[in-house]
Amino acid sequence: MHAWQQNYDPLGDLFLSSAVALIPIVFFFLALLVMKLKGHIACTITVLLTALVATLFYKMPLSYALASAAYGFLYGLWPIAWIILAAVFLYKLSVKTGHFEIIRGSIVSVSDDQRIQVLLVAYGFGAFLEGAAGFGAPVAITTALLVGLGVPPLYAGGLCLIANAAPGAFGAMGIPVIVGGQVIGAEPIAVAYNVVPSIAVLSFVLPYVLVALVDGWRGIRETWPAISVTAIVFTVTQSGTVLLVGPELPDIVASLCTLMVLPMFLKVWRPAHSFRFPAAEKEAVIVEDTYTRGEMLRAWAPFIVLTVCVALWSVPPFKKLFIGNGPLAWTVYSFPFPLLHDAVLKMPPVTAGPTPYHAIFKLDFVSSVGTAIMIAGIISVFVLGAKVQEAGRIFVQTLKELRIPFYSIGMVLAFAFLANYSGLSATLALLFADASSAFTFLSPILGWLGVFLTGSDTSSNALFGGLQAATGHQIGVSGPLLVAANTVGGAVGKMISPQSIAVACAAIGFVGREGDLLRFTLKWSVLLVVMVGIVVTLQAYVFS
Image 1 (cartoon, rainbow, N blue to C red):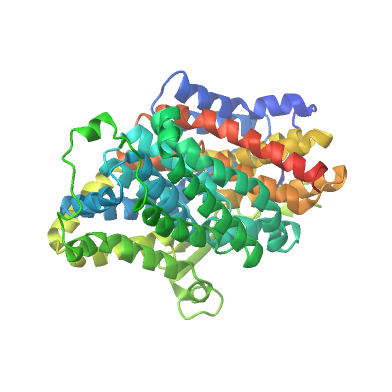
Image 2: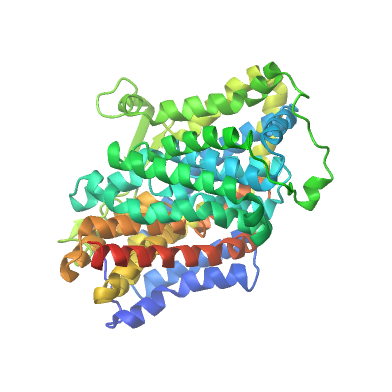
């Protein structure tokens, strides 16, 4: 099969080529924010535009363009849609059996103030799920939980997307940092150390941002002791775990400490005024002694089982069962994607020399995080005492409700893979790299763009890590520092990633209103990535 070489400057002028490369991205934002098209329609047109740019300007063979879009679409279905289906099924099972009311009561018993509930669920529990699983599960589960607590869907989705930035750099047991180190041939701990300053600022600021979004400055004035406890405990334990242990456990340790310390603090301090959204005000307040401990334990059992399963699926000894000569390696089916695997060559300066662009599709039926969540759901059917037929109906209903969101996610990934295999994303990266000493400020913005294009901080590091390090070598800045900047910028970019937006909308039945959710998160995403750029520049030139 003839190998096609990527050309990152098809028009002979990097600025003009970048302007062409931006056409699909600009259209996507305009379609959602200005034209207010439904998400699946905007994504479909964006894929078509990207295919036109790839074939007409980048001269990508049509068969390769179609193959890369198909590869991305299928990746959107497995494993991403599988994870969301399992997470939403677990949540709906809890709701339909009536046990979510008990969960709601137990959270209200800690605090009926929804500003505090956002800190507990979106920030604390979301960070735990991100540290253990990642790949959309945290946003899907915590968004659904907040909606169940009476938080309006738009706020629930937006707050969980924003909160997800704090644990994003060390998500899924530190995979983004580990891959970033591997890409540039550096020890992951070197990248992790450089992540600490900017992620510490981010993790400390975000609890204040979340409460401000819920209740403005009044909310910060009334709850600043609880916000400060959350920010300090999470930031100190996250940074300390990185420095003392490494990149695998910071999110898990920080979230567990936060989830233990904040409820203890609330036993000795409560805000003078309890805030609830207007819709939640109409609901009956559940008192602390309404349910027995046994009832509360049973209601929480699905999420306890979920936590155990996700943690088990994330530990290295369990993962080794599915790779190489592991006893369960036969459950993983991988194959080179037709018409695409090694058919595209990545070229300098993105790589040191012509490098085949792999395209291996993996069906990890057992080792997928989605399977861990689904097993938790199946166990929960019996723990909650649901009839098997009822659980089957809930599953089928969930699948029907998620058809359009799954299509949207598939098209988002089709766009991302097409942009990467055509070289479109690399064109934009090279424009950033052309900024000389200002690149330290732009470096996290490149990671931000990478996650917008790929939906994954890990993928962003794999895509742009080498370019970050090479540019750092040219301007005399540490490669691990710039890969760290790419990682933290990517964590901030997840809140505007089309994939993340689609996941949140799928979890709360917000189909067709993706633009509203993007409008909610966009301003904060831009402000936070600028803040990260300032911190990275200070790291490079002031505190190096």
